[in-house]
Image (cartoon, rainbow, N blue to C red; front, top):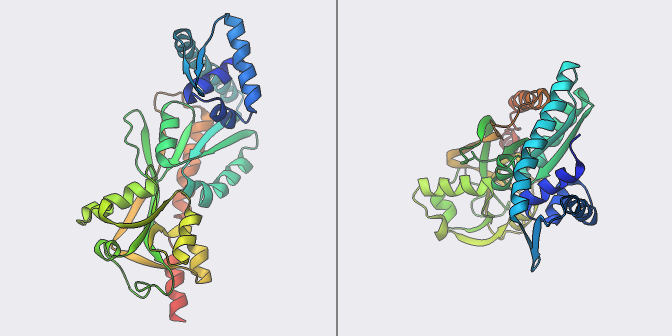
Length: 314
């Protein structure tokens, strides 16, 4: 219900990018630029400085950003309150998820939530855990699902479920027949790693440090931001990798990859983060409760290793 120009300006100001704002708002970049220009004409002043392909807020833009944040928050709260009085769970829901969760767990959960509350407009942003937490903290997103605990003191974190990480390798790799592998075993092998900022990378680096292996001393063949790319590199026997067991279920069934448990076992809590200072609508409360229950029910399919073991026994 808030002025569309203000909504667009707020998103551009938070992202400091017309392109990123267009992606978030599901608009074209020219349409975003037009809305900001309209607001600047309304105030008869520039809200952004533009130079060398970058933008920054003018002093007036900084002031307008402060007011727009409060106006948009009040507008959203008003719509949510009215909806609650009429008994409806409706409206937009801005969700962020790390790529592992977005690709392997969230689609089914979102589908079931949408079936229960068909008037909800869920919008999903996919990025690594660090980026999602930052977007929740600046209120660009209502809630985030990430692979590592957030270190932001302005966010509340709810542990959803346990996820096991395993070493994966090609079937003909020297470690493929082992019952388990240690951090030192992996340190002696060519290694395929996730990129910095990834929740998986953070957890794995801590695992190595805790077992007296400096992550900087690993024989890293390549750093990749895509699980599919990592699986492809490992299948080609370019190195081993540590990944969530839930992301390699298909490859284990096909026999293109082998998963070996880590010793000691490595698990992590997949977490849901939200900004406690932001108004919690009935819609957001419903989604948070729904996700908690669904993650507990599915357990993130911790069974791929068991299926692999049965396949070997045949």
